[in-house]
Image: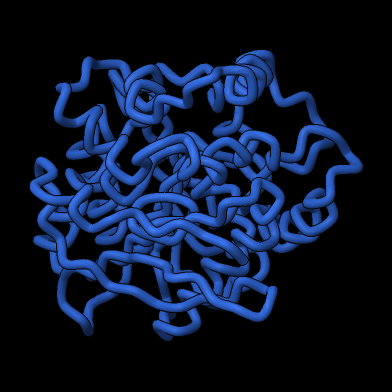
Length: 300
């Protein structure tokens, strides 16, 4: 599989992102491998919080949350999905599939030997993370779902998502930093916009970001629909603590929280919360608040 690797100098001196890089090799399913980047912060023997980002962000999205969660005594693992951040970026759009994204994250978790994890997931972090909870429920101790869902294509995705999907394919320049800012409730500083752009020196590095919106199941016959329906069978029997921490200003996922709370047994009786003044990227808008919610949830 052909890929690009963002030069390290693109990540020099990013604001509030001084974390040490870590890497694993994951199978590209074509006889080669891809380098996957992740952050590993906090005590090595502490309970693990797995933070999964979505589209088109990267681990930079969690920079406000990581210090708070590690200061509370937890270990935080935050990968860059393949095609994003410091991870390798295949150059052919069709190399990115839903199944491969799930398998790549699964490989990371297996290589690190992670168990009893608390999953914190947003956007595609939930499409991948909730799928993994459904396939490996024994790996997870609890879940915090924020502005995300596990779609099967059996329900209309909503006009807001369809507009985003169309935009992602038609815009000649896929401005990652401005897209993230457009999904926030508060303005972003120019240097923060630049940090979100850092992994992508030019459009050739953005094939994964371009492809992600097309991989969301929006019809019952979507290739990922059967596996997601199977994962839902497990999620509807998942009795471990499951918390929804959605924001108040996200039109794309607003209707998902009640569905998760209704269908997942572990969501019953939990202190579900709405993060005020948060857009789709609530980690950017209200990362400190979401981190506090996660810590309090873990402490019971």
